[in-house]
View 1 (cartoon, rainbow, N blue to C red):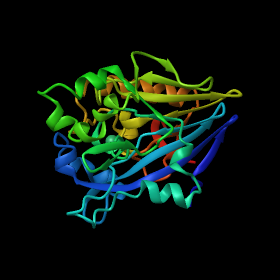
View 2: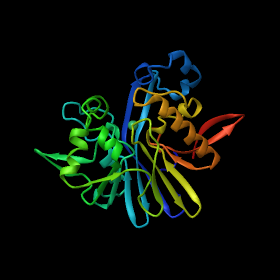
View 3: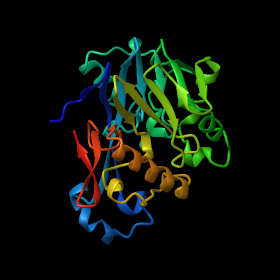
Length: 279
Ligand SMILES: [Zn+2]
């Protein structure tokens, strides 16, 4: 199995997971006819579904511990068999305590990236990571409060995002933002208005936590395929295209949370075509 901890200069990146999610193709990629998937069948499950890892990355940089994305969250009491809800088990399995996290950074505020932010205690919420402040883009913070988009696009924001403000834990990023001397959040909009990817630079080495700028290796081959989850299809295509160009050209390691775990790889070119190559 591919290793789930890598080093980028002085920075350590550990891949963690909250489990997985599966979708029907026509549901997740409604504009892509099913026969166009034929060359990519090896990327699908036996039932012809698309499966996503729910990846988070724990980054140690500059004396700080940063958690990027927090999965879908605890298993619901009325659906205890779901294949997600594992993130805190994965913390334990890797000897990491939630108390160690200084910063929670969300690439965006969709429900599968904010689920473990808070724990409900009766009517009150407490932060799952009690020593952390929570970083997100101002644009997504605004979008997840808009009545016209919130219920469909940011379904769990009322319980997983909004209460962070009352707890005084919100840090908003308005544009490119330095999180530590080695970590920079970069706007990569389209999937959501304020989507961010996290660039890691240390000792001449680089990596990028991609977020949902792509959902799987097939979108490296077919960068124009947009999903139901991409809020602005045209901007998503532009951002993804520019990002893939740069990742290939500059030989940057990619940490891709929805790609097969642990999601570390590079964008490579073989016979004129771009591919995902796992590390
Ligand atoms: Zn996602």
